[in-house]
Amino acid sequence: MSENIPKLRAALEGMPAYKPGKRDAAGGPVSYKLSSNENPYPPLPGVLEAVGEAAGAMNRYPDMACSGLLDELALRFDVPVERLATGTGSVGVAQQLLQATSGPGDEVIYAWRSFEAYPIITQISGATPVQVPLTPDEEHDLDAMADAITERTRLIFVCNPNNPTGVAIPAADLERFLDRVPRDVLVVLDEAYREFVRDERVVDGLEVYRDRPNVCVLRTFSKAYGLAGLRVGFAVAHEPVAAALRKTAVPFGVSQLAQDAAVASLRSEDALLERVEALVGERSRVADELRAQGWTVPPTEANFVWLRLGERTDDFAMACERAGVVVRPFAGEGARVSIGEVEANDLFLRAAEVFRKTM
Ligand SMILES: Cc1ncc(COP(=O)(O)O)c(C=O)c1O
Image (tube, rainbow, N blue to C red):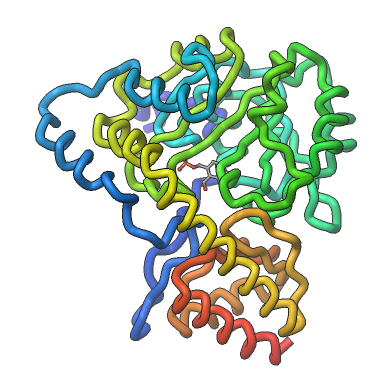
């Protein structure tokens, strides 16, 4: 029989599947999705109009170079267009970076637990994942990550703030780590949640990458900008890396709807900042109230909180679901809960309070 089955790459065997955040609470009277770190707000002003116009031309391929979006990004972030590259979400850009740098025999380092796509896209590339456990305080163990570098290391992901723990890396620690990384190893600063960072000790990757040709920054329109459904992200990288990203991109991968929505979102900065500020306010409220209930909540700079629940994780997720909120459990480890609408956060806090009393 086996000769009738197409030969598939051995690298795919035993590969973890990406587990998306569950969409709905089963059967409850209400259901809020706090499982995917999405933005609870509707699209920013001007976005629906831009998408509507682009939709009328969907018989045409999109602008493959994403030139309108690149021009807008160059203006907004004060970087030359040659240092920008786009992709189908920042996870798409991350996959392009792996294709550009890593293959069988190479090693890719990242903290663990971190963004669950890292092991998947690393294994797809054929490279070997090297996972470095977080410290007991849920921080990146940057010394251990630097110690893990070998002559086979090609790429290092630094998730800042980290998904799912929310903890961010102080500038001094990051700089010290980067000083230890050989210049021919690419460091990817994954800043999917950058807009939510308020701790002034956490440096913006766009300041760090400038003097370091082996550092690039990943950003996304999926979180603060609220365009998760349209799949568009970008990298800021020195020219050789940005050029490699253009080579490894899926042709026409970023739809015209996504490109035009991203441009319109960038032009709605005031509304964006207002919404992000409201979410940051809710984040403080949720974290403070959880701590008052007796929970240990790591300091979060992202749009979610992390509760290390160990063996109680799945019970907790079920209790939240019964209360009408879907959270993201990582079995045996903990639950990540996105900051959502005020009503959703309230429902979650009530469920957490009741559950806490059972512990
Ligand atoms: C750390 C991190 N990076 C990247 C992404 C990917 O986002 P997208 O592909 O939607 O841009 C996510 C999404 O959850 C994330 O948490």
